[in-house]
Image 1: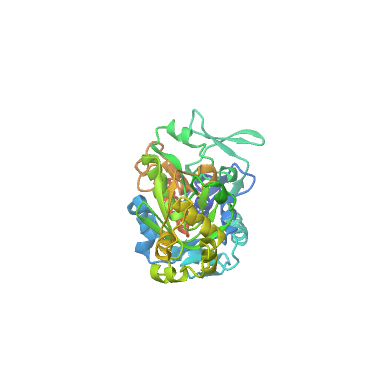
Image 2 (image 1 turned 90 degrees about the vertical axis):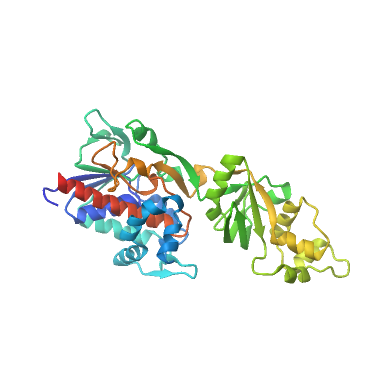
Length: 402
């Protein structure tokens, strides 16, 4: 890039760091600013669960996971697809593997080795990293303003990328504090909402006593969506891998109607007739004994009673039907502080095709602060990387034109 143009990247998560890598490789002088003491904290937390980097399912199914944002994100996902992200990670010395579910992980099953190699690459490319720099907007002359340990810092750059994250897990750095700064500049925003979060159910005391107990191999259905997997009972309701794919639809239904209906199939791999035969009464055995002998855990038995209003049917067929369709009322969802990700943010209508803010020429945006959402399973990180790279390409074009 002629002239050694300068690029300021505000936010040191995946979207900001991948943009820094691309821009510095093209010859720009890049500085990354982050308000936390260290970079990519949410990436490291994700790594505790193995760092599900992306997903290997066919592209059409993959793109569909982004719901209403699918058509908008599609060109960026096609330009920077899952296979390219896997190759990038392998280029950092991280061997990858695809699990039986199609989820793609580093063989190390954590984020720290990848992040160390990535930061070393950025350093080798001349990227400057400045932590403990909290962005405070712009001054009257258009310079970026940061609150830093040494006091207020003002920065001028030829192009700026905002990659500040959404508002989930604010203690890790993405607190949504940027929203009033952009709104004041005329940037169109959608309200930030929790995504991939737990759901709230008014449990009875026996259910609350089982908080922390896993619920394995079940199918959950709500609002026309269905997901199979595991969940965990909490004091407030349910969370986990089978809950998160339904949580956005549940969130919207609760917002519109005050509640949502949830159905749990406790034995999705078994026909009702086969289950009824296992539950047949033998020599006057109690329902609790029949459930235990049929392999039902304490949590599953408690859920059955919760759905039936405490009194379970004696008839085996009716008991099996109840186990195949435990019906519960959801009255709320967990907030942003406990959500894995967030929905809302910078509207696609506020951006041009290069991810530059129409109201702020030379300022681009990428990552979770854009208005899109997706379930867990590798889709969140993939879109953060893809939008970060798309913004970097947009910045290169902008800087070349200047």
